Every structure is written in C-alpha cells, then in structure tokens.
Amino acid sequence: MTTSIEDRYAAEQAQTDHDHHVPTAGAMTNHILANLHISIVKFHQVRWSVKGPLALSVRTLLSDYIATYRRQFDALGELLLDEGETVSTTTQEFHDYNMLNESGAKKYLSAEDQVSELVHDADTHNLFIDRAIKLAENEERPALAAFLVSLRGINNHIIRELQAVLGNDARDGLDEEDDDDDED
Image (tube, rainbow, N blue to C red; front, side, top):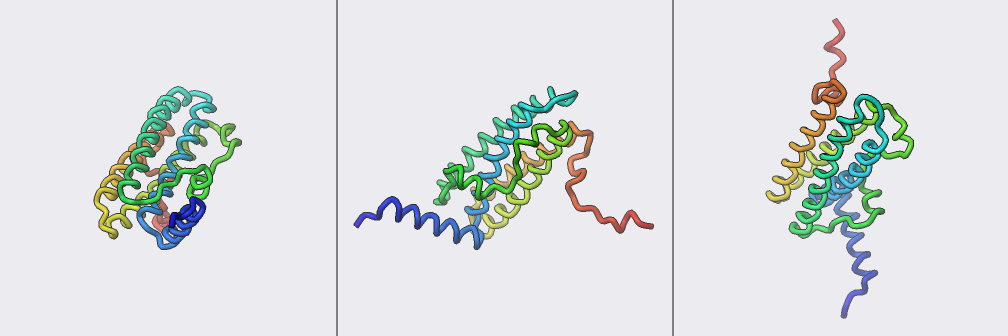
C-alpha cells in the first residue's frame, strides 16, 4: 500500500518535531539554514537602506556576504540531504526555525545600529553552529562537523569585518565581561 502525500508529510513533521526537542545535529543545522535565509534578507535590507559615511563600505561588504551566505545555504541543504536529513523547504519552516529578529522598521536605524545588529546576528549564528558541531561530533558525522567548523570560521571573519567598520575589535560588545574586575 502506498502512503498518501499527506501521511508522508505528517510523518516528516512528527520526526522533525521530535528531532528539534532532542535535539539532533540535523535539527540544529536546520536552525542554521533558517538563520542563513533570514540573514540574506536582512543583508539586503541594510544594503538597500544604509545611509551616511559607512554606506559604500557596508554595501560592498554585504554584497560579498549575500553571495557567501547563498553558497553556504545551498551547500548546507545539500549536505543535510547527503546525511539523510530532512531539509527545511518552506517559508513557514524558515520562520519557525529562525532565531533572528527582523522588522521593516530597522531600515530607519542609523548605519551603525544596522551594522551592529548584523554583528549580533552573526554571533547568534555562531551559538547554533557551535551546538550543531558538538551534536555532529557526538553523532559521529564528520562531514557535517567539518562543514560547520568552516562555517564558524567564515562567520568569525564576517563579525571581525563588520566590527572594523564600526571601529571595534572582533569581540567588542559580544562576550560577557566580568564586571567585578572593574571594581577596585
């Protein structure tokens, strides 16, 4: 007996829901895929709306990052399929698994605030990448882990470049600092 399309999709959704609550490397990687998708949209928003002295350098960087994230998005989707995982394929899934905040109003922020938001988004990406790397290693999925490690390195570079536009060092404002050290 052939299973209906609806039954197949319902089974997929049940497995996906289970994997996101366990979690698995595949589920965590689908969060990364969703974050990449939303980041591409956010990069476009900033690229199209940024104004002022930073505009030219920011637009140039974001053109490169859009291309980079598109390549990563495509390669990560293929890798998930190679690993026998279900890949998010709908806008709803990207919305559900995305961990970034977006708003049309953000295009009116200052250039510095728009770039700062992108820095924090990339840092959020790293949280999910780090979790996925650990899960992939625990699940003995070396190809997935290696790809994710590379993704982490590229993300670190993007953070450093965007921070430089703002006049910051790579980790400025991202790492929790021990306030007790400042009190003497």
